[in-house]
Length: 121
Image: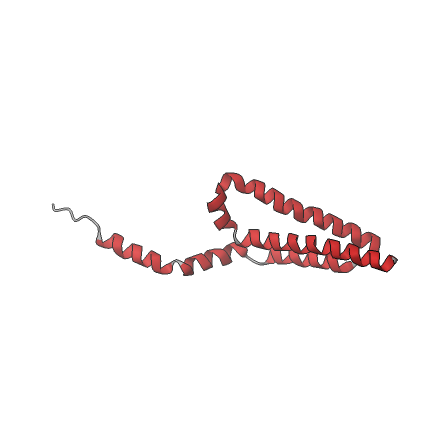
């Protein structure tokens, strides 16, 4: 009976670990698109909610590690944190946006250079 209780608790806490990790990665990768949607004035509140949720889940994970010596959740959270620090999400998003909109920029450059006014002296 005690073992089943522990398994249920692990299953209960599994989803917050996964959701917090996915939210951190999603927010980091889609940050610039979200800023365009929500404006820079609302983004700090979104950051507070997402990072706050991650920190709360991390604290619960550390408490679980201390009480139950269960290292798997702490490993998931540490891997998430390391990937968040090591992967340059901003650079990836900027490069992706640059490559996706390259033809639009070329097209705009061609139309803007051909539409200059020629002034006679």
